[in-house]
Amino acid sequence: MPRETEPAAPTVQPERGRVSVRALLLLGAVALALYGLDQLAKFLIVTHLQVGQLVPVLGQVLQLHYVTNSGAAFSLASGFTWILSIVAVGVVIVIVWFSRRIRSFAWATVFGLLLGGAVGNLTDRLFREPGFGTGHVVDFVQVWGFPAIFNLADSGIVVAMGLFIILSLRGIGLDGSKAVYIRTKRSADDPDIVPEPPRTPSTTRQDLADGADHDTHEATAPEGR
Image 1 (tube, helix red, strand yellow):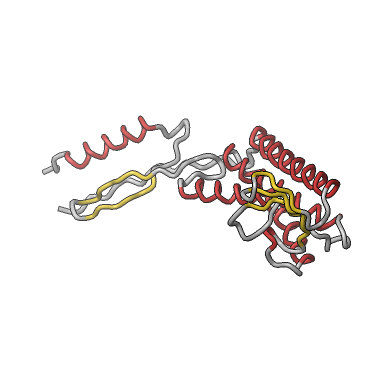
Image 2 (tube, one colour):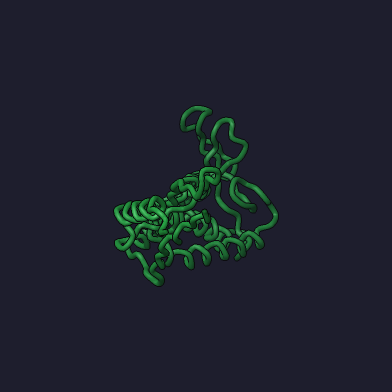
Protein backbone atom coordinates (compact mmCIF):
# COMPACT_ATOMS: atom_id res chain seq x y z
CA MET A 1 0.00 0.00 0.00
CA PRO A 2 1.57 3.36 -0.96
CA ARG A 3 2.52 5.65 1.87
CA GLU A 4 0.08 8.46 2.33
CA THR A 5 1.38 12.00 2.42
CA GLU A 6 0.10 14.80 4.57
CA PRO A 7 -1.60 17.75 2.89
CA ALA A 8 0.44 20.93 3.05
CA ALA A 9 -0.45 23.21 5.94
CA PRO A 10 -2.23 26.40 4.89
CA THR A 11 0.05 29.38 4.70
CA VAL A 12 -1.02 32.78 5.92
CA GLN A 13 0.72 35.80 4.53
CA PRO A 14 1.66 38.27 7.30
CA GLU A 15 0.45 41.80 6.98
CA ARG A 16 3.18 44.11 5.67
CA GLY A 17 3.68 47.78 6.18
CA ARG A 18 1.46 47.96 9.22
CA VAL A 19 2.80 50.14 12.01
CA SER A 20 1.63 49.83 15.62
CA VAL A 21 1.18 53.36 16.92
CA ARG A 22 0.77 52.19 20.52
CA ALA A 23 3.99 50.17 20.40
CA LEU A 24 5.85 53.17 18.95
CA LEU A 25 4.44 55.44 21.64
CA LEU A 26 5.55 53.02 24.35
CA LEU A 27 9.02 52.74 22.80
CA GLY A 28 9.33 56.51 22.68
CA ALA A 29 8.04 56.96 26.23
CA VAL A 30 10.47 54.38 27.66
CA ALA A 31 13.39 55.89 25.73
CA LEU A 32 12.51 59.43 26.78
CA ALA A 33 12.03 58.46 30.43
CA LEU A 34 15.38 56.67 30.63
CA TYR A 35 17.17 59.44 28.79
CA GLY A 36 15.66 62.12 31.03
CA LEU A 37 16.51 60.28 34.26
CA ASP A 38 20.04 59.54 33.05
CA GLN A 39 20.78 63.14 32.08
CA LEU A 40 19.19 64.54 35.23
CA ALA A 41 21.24 62.23 37.44
CA LYS A 42 24.43 63.14 35.58
CA PHE A 43 23.62 66.84 35.92
CA LEU A 44 23.17 66.50 39.68
CA ILE A 45 26.39 64.50 40.02
CA VAL A 46 28.46 66.97 37.99
CA THR A 47 26.95 69.93 39.85
CA HIS A 48 27.37 68.68 43.41
CA LEU A 49 30.36 66.33 43.35
CA GLN A 50 34.00 66.55 42.36
CA VAL A 51 35.61 64.00 40.07
CA GLY A 52 36.72 61.08 42.22
CA GLN A 53 34.49 62.01 45.16
CA LEU A 54 32.81 59.08 46.91
CA VAL A 55 29.46 59.37 48.72
CA PRO A 56 28.04 56.32 50.58
CA VAL A 57 24.33 55.70 50.01
CA LEU A 58 23.89 52.26 51.60
CA GLY A 59 27.23 51.95 53.33
CA GLN A 60 29.67 50.14 51.06
CA VAL A 61 26.90 48.22 49.29
CA LEU A 62 25.86 51.22 47.16
CA GLN A 63 27.93 54.36 46.70
CA LEU A 64 28.01 57.40 44.43
CA HIS A 65 31.48 57.57 42.89
CA TYR A 66 31.90 60.32 40.29
CA VAL A 67 34.26 59.29 37.49
CA THR A 68 34.56 60.07 33.79
CA ASN A 69 34.81 57.30 31.24
CA SER A 70 36.21 57.54 27.71
CA GLY A 71 35.16 53.97 26.92
CA ALA A 72 31.98 51.96 26.53
CA ALA A 73 29.48 50.81 29.13
CA PHE A 74 31.00 49.85 32.48
CA SER A 75 34.28 51.63 31.58
CA LEU A 76 35.17 49.09 28.89
CA ALA A 77 37.25 49.89 25.76
CA SER A 78 38.70 53.14 27.09
CA GLY A 79 40.55 55.15 24.48
CA PHE A 80 38.18 54.30 21.60
CA THR A 81 35.77 57.20 22.10
CA TRP A 82 35.44 58.18 18.43
CA ILE A 83 34.77 54.59 17.37
CA LEU A 84 32.24 54.14 20.17
CA SER A 85 30.49 57.36 19.14
CA ILE A 86 30.12 56.08 15.57
CA VAL A 87 28.88 52.71 16.82
CA ALA A 88 26.34 54.43 19.07
CA VAL A 89 25.00 56.47 16.14
CA GLY A 90 24.68 53.24 14.14
CA VAL A 91 22.80 51.57 16.99
CA VAL A 92 20.35 54.47 17.19
CA ILE A 93 19.72 54.32 13.43
CA VAL A 94 19.12 50.55 13.54
CA ILE A 95 16.69 50.88 16.46
CA VAL A 96 14.71 53.62 14.71
CA TRP A 97 14.58 51.55 11.51
CA PHE A 98 13.44 48.39 13.31
CA SER A 99 10.85 50.30 15.33
CA ARG A 100 8.47 50.23 12.33
CA ARG A 101 8.21 46.44 12.63
CA ILE A 102 7.48 46.33 16.37
CA ARG A 103 3.92 45.49 17.44
CA SER A 104 4.76 43.87 20.78
CA PHE A 105 4.77 45.98 23.94
CA ALA A 106 7.54 43.80 25.38
CA TRP A 107 9.78 44.38 22.37
CA ALA A 108 8.87 48.06 22.41
CA THR A 109 10.17 48.21 25.98
CA VAL A 110 13.39 46.46 24.96
CA PHE A 111 14.07 48.84 22.09
CA GLY A 112 13.03 51.83 24.18
CA LEU A 113 15.58 50.96 26.86
CA LEU A 114 18.27 50.39 24.23
CA LEU A 115 17.47 53.67 22.52
CA GLY A 116 17.36 55.69 25.73
CA GLY A 117 20.61 54.19 26.99
CA ALA A 118 22.43 54.60 23.70
CA VAL A 119 21.34 58.23 23.26
CA GLY A 120 22.14 59.00 26.92
CA ASN A 121 25.77 57.95 26.62
CA LEU A 122 26.04 59.33 23.08
CA THR A 123 25.02 62.75 24.38
CA ASP A 124 27.97 62.68 26.77
CA ARG A 125 30.40 61.68 24.02
CA LEU A 126 29.19 64.43 21.73
CA PHE A 127 28.86 67.36 24.10
CA ARG A 128 31.08 66.83 27.15
CA GLU A 129 34.76 67.54 27.58
CA PRO A 130 37.30 67.19 26.06
CA GLY A 131 35.51 67.74 22.74
CA PHE A 132 32.83 66.86 20.23
CA GLY A 133 32.76 63.11 19.60
CA THR A 134 35.47 62.47 22.17
CA GLY A 135 33.62 63.50 25.31
CA HIS A 136 33.86 61.38 28.43
CA VAL A 137 30.76 59.66 29.82
CA VAL A 138 29.77 60.44 33.41
CA ASP A 139 29.63 57.31 35.58
CA PHE A 140 28.63 57.43 39.22
CA VAL A 141 27.01 54.19 40.48
CA GLN A 142 29.29 51.84 42.38
CA VAL A 143 27.96 48.56 43.76
CA TRP A 144 29.92 46.44 46.21
CA GLY A 145 31.50 43.45 44.52
CA PHE A 146 30.93 44.80 41.02
CA PRO A 147 34.20 45.66 39.23
CA ALA A 148 32.96 48.66 37.21
CA ILE A 149 31.28 52.00 37.86
CA PHE A 150 28.25 52.71 35.67
CA ASN A 151 25.30 55.05 35.10
CA LEU A 152 21.55 54.78 34.50
CA ALA A 153 21.99 54.51 30.72
CA ASP A 154 24.22 51.47 31.22
CA SER A 155 21.64 49.94 33.54
CA GLY A 156 18.89 50.42 30.97
CA ILE A 157 20.98 48.72 28.29
CA VAL A 158 21.68 45.73 30.56
CA VAL A 159 17.98 45.36 31.46
CA ALA A 160 17.12 45.53 27.75
CA MET A 161 19.56 42.74 26.95
CA GLY A 162 18.08 40.61 29.71
CA LEU A 163 14.59 41.10 28.30
CA PHE A 164 15.93 40.39 24.81
CA ILE A 165 17.23 37.00 25.94
CA ILE A 166 13.95 36.12 27.70
CA LEU A 167 11.78 37.07 24.71
CA SER A 168 14.07 35.22 22.30
CA LEU A 169 14.01 32.05 24.42
CA ARG A 170 10.22 32.21 24.58
CA GLY A 171 10.03 32.57 20.81
CA ILE A 172 8.15 35.88 20.84
CA GLY A 173 8.54 37.83 17.60
CA LEU A 174 8.62 41.57 17.05
CA ASP A 175 4.93 41.45 16.14
CA GLY A 176 4.07 39.73 19.43
CA SER A 177 3.37 36.32 17.88
CA LYS A 178 4.74 33.29 19.68
CA ALA A 179 6.21 30.28 17.90
CA VAL A 180 4.06 27.26 18.81
CA TYR A 181 5.02 23.70 17.89
CA ILE A 182 2.64 20.77 17.47
CA ARG A 183 3.60 17.12 17.15
CA THR A 184 2.48 15.34 14.01
CA LYS A 185 3.16 11.78 12.85
CA ARG A 186 3.64 10.80 9.21
CA SER A 187 4.02 7.12 10.06
CA ALA A 188 4.53 4.86 13.06
CA ASP A 189 8.30 5.20 12.74
CA ASP A 190 8.55 8.78 11.53
CA PRO A 191 7.88 11.26 14.36
CA ASP A 192 8.42 14.87 13.59
CA ILE A 193 7.89 18.32 15.06
CA VAL A 194 6.50 20.96 12.74
CA PRO A 195 5.57 24.56 13.52
CA GLU A 196 1.92 25.38 13.90
CA PRO A 197 0.70 27.88 11.28
CA PRO A 198 0.30 31.45 12.63
CA ARG A 199 -3.11 31.99 14.13
CA THR A 200 -5.07 34.70 12.39
CA PRO A 201 -8.80 35.30 12.02
CA SER A 202 -8.65 32.92 9.00
CA THR A 203 -6.59 30.23 10.75
CA THR A 204 -8.04 29.40 14.18
CA ARG A 205 -7.72 26.48 16.55
CA GLN A 206 -11.06 25.15 15.27
CA ASP A 207 -9.72 25.26 11.67
CA LEU A 208 -6.71 23.22 12.71
CA ALA A 209 -8.95 20.69 14.52
CA ASP A 210 -11.20 20.39 11.45
CA GLY A 211 -8.14 19.83 9.26
CA ALA A 212 -6.89 17.09 11.62
CA ASP A 213 -10.30 15.35 11.54
CA HIS A 214 -10.32 15.51 7.73
CA ASP A 215 -6.84 13.92 7.57
CA THR A 216 -7.98 11.16 9.96
CA HIS A 217 -11.04 10.33 7.81
CA GLU A 218 -8.89 10.17 4.67
CA ALA A 219 -6.32 7.92 6.36
CA THR A 220 -8.97 5.46 7.64
CA ALA A 221 -11.18 5.39 4.52
CA PRO A 222 -11.28 1.91 2.84
CA GLU A 223 -9.51 1.53 -0.46
CA GLY A 224 -11.65 1.33 -3.56
CA ARG A 225 -11.84 -2.02 -5.38
